[in-house]
Length: 225
Ligand SMILES: [Zn+2]
Image (cartoon, rainbow, N blue to C red; front, side, top):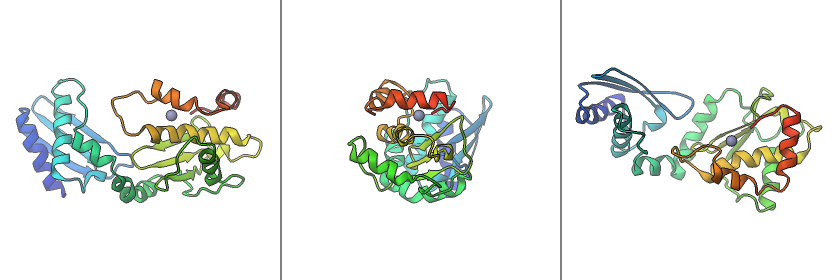
């Protein structure tokens, strides 16, 4: 869909909500998101270009959700079509490489100086903690961030681990735990209405046998998830 098609659909939905002047365009954000500005009669949307190949009903579903929010009709969920489309295997399959290209702080390699993230993943699979998913891309970060040592894009199926953990002085099970934490986000999946580290997440995360020990290590190193 071109910008014109996007604009047309947002205008149609906007009209139904009493908005006369509506602009919408695709923008190449790194993350999947929408930004908007509005007054009481105009609205301007910048929509992630990861949506550029979405079918018209998905775009209209998104527009309806956003206008309902703007009009103060609570915090409605995304449409079923929208959720289905962004969580389909093709979504991450075809957009992951663009996402990685836009992620400047990733080495785009599993192999670090001392550690191989593929081996961390293998240990988690062998321990029965996660199921193997060949669609997940794993990478070390370029900069050894310590404030936040794990990142994950659920929709793009990308897990990134800080290269601060690519250090033989930090035990293997601590790095594995950080990867497990990020993989738990992917297992739980896309659910914008639920809390990121809510009780469902905590239950899953607590299956890691040395969780407390790993968290103690991270705390001592002033590293955070
Ligand atoms: Zn997390």
